[in-house]
Image 1 (cartoon, rainbow, N blue to C red):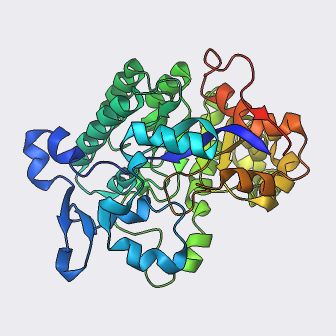
Image 2 (cartoon, rainbow, N blue to C red):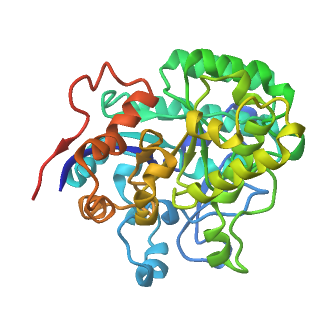
Length: 379
């Protein structure tokens, strides 16, 4: 059983006053804020019109079984894991769950990528980045924040990239499904990708970060929508490959975050086949499309036994495990059990890579984890 691992996919649940206290004053009357028993619904809700009101317990309910969710949702922030916004409590949870360090992303901030006011959205992400840096500063050798970048204006987003780089962020977090005029294969992003590559900051593409008003999980059929959640990230990354973006930027790192990995071998096979079938139409690509993926795309998962079994078809060096704390999908508080279940029969050297070594390399953490990035012990 693994006694300590590094999580390449964890989150926070932002404190409810983050945006009302940190956004520019001109935006604060519209900033995300907390309301209780909103529209007759019991519990706490984060409200930010025109976005749909949001119950924050959906992001702080790790370890709560499905049959208890309805009751749990009425408890508001008071019942959520306090480590979601309090680094002191977070370290206690990390120690309990056997995690040595975490790459962490926003929580409610994922939904802000859908906000239609670009200027408002950029400032909301800037406010989050400031808070995340302070949160991580409590334990700079264990908590590594990823900065939100709006991807609404190439020049302004480039300025924020420069700013967060100076602040010490290890990577950036962007929408998994940008608007048609802002797709990442558009040449308007060329200077941005050049800077990201020079900074060696991985680009993280996470589920549930769509631009625009169409939700990626609807009330009509959340089961089917949930199964299909990896599709937008695949399309976005594949577009960057076929446009020649990864050919132009061979050191650019893309991370498919929380999209699981079991589907990847078949998609890579299909990419290789259609590269053969339609290759002459894509002179920007010097390699097969799948080869760019294998070279520059990494992926995280938390509980995906089929994917681990197919790890050789994806590339063991391209995979990273994450706990997804403090969300419902999280393996917390039983990450050790989940790891043993997923990694049964996996050699120790491959465990070392997927449970920490790859994260250290991808995010440039070698100076902090020079010796052993994981400690393995059979129990």
